[in-house]
Image 1 (cartoon, rainbow, N blue to C red):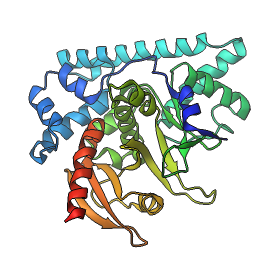
Image 2 (image 1 turned 180 degrees about the horizontal axis):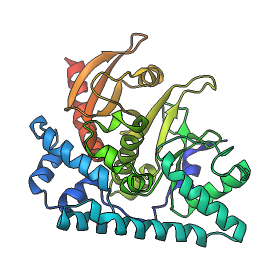
Image 3 (image 1 turned 90 degrees about the horizontal axis):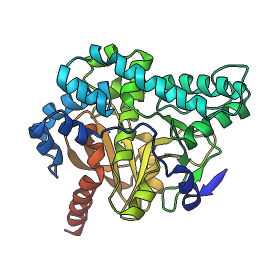
Image 4 (image 1 turned 60 degrees about the horizontal axis):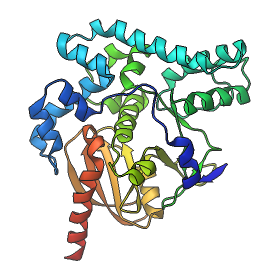
Length: 336
C-alpha cells in the first residue's frame, strides 16, 4: 500500500522509548574535546580522520545509551558493561510484554521482538519470521505494536526520486532497533567487531547501516516543521518488482531527495545509486564509507553526469551541514 508522506509521517513521528546519545554527544560525554572540535568543522579536515574513525568504531561497538557510555568513560572496559546491557534489554522486553492484551499476544510480542535483534538493519517479511506457528498477519500485528510504542522502527521504502515521497508500506520494511550497542551485545558480535577497520565489511553491512540510521535519526533541525519531515527514515527501491535496485537512505535537503549509500571502501559498486541519479531531477549523491572526505564528478552507467560526495561514515550526523557546502561548490563549478 502506497501512502502520501504527509499521511505516513503521523505514523512515524515517535521516539524510541530508549533514548541514546549521538556520536557528537558521545564525544562530549567521554571528554574527547579535541575530537569534538574536529567533528564540528565544516568542511571536515581529513587530517582528523584516523582519530575520529577510531572513536566512531568505539561508539558503534558500545552504543549510545547514556549510562552505558558514562560507565565506559569511567571504567574504560567493555566487559564491565554487561549488567547495564542486560538491564536495558530486560526493561525493553518487559515493556513489549506490557502492550499485549492476552497471554498469547505476550508470547508473540516477546518472541518477535527478541528475534528482531539479529535482523537489525535488514529487510524482513512477516511470513515465516520468528516462530513458524505464528501467521504472517500475527507477526505483522506484533511488529506494528512494537513500532507504534517506540520499541523498534519499521523503515519503509519509497519508489520516488522526487518529493513528496510516496511511502510504500506494502513492501518489506527494514528493522531499526533502539541502539546499535544493544544489538552487538544481544547478538554476541562485540568481539568480532572490536578489531574491524571498516564496519561495512562485516555482517553484510548490517552494523554500518544500523549505526548510520541511528545517526541520521539524531540529525534533525531544531525547526519543528523540519523535524517532523526528517524524524522518519526511508530508503529507495526501484519501481519494478523484478528489480533489486536499492539505495540505503534518502534524505530531504533543500527540497530535493538526496540518495545516500553506505559502502565498503572507496571502490564499492554504486549501481543502485546510478539508477537513482538517472531518474532524479538533480545531480547530487552521497556515499558514506570508511575513507576521507572527497568530492568528484562522475558518470552513471548510462552517461549522466553527477557529483558524488564521499563522506566518512562518522559524519552521518552532520550530513546536512556538509551537503550545504557540497552543493554550493558544485553550483559554482558548473557556473564556470
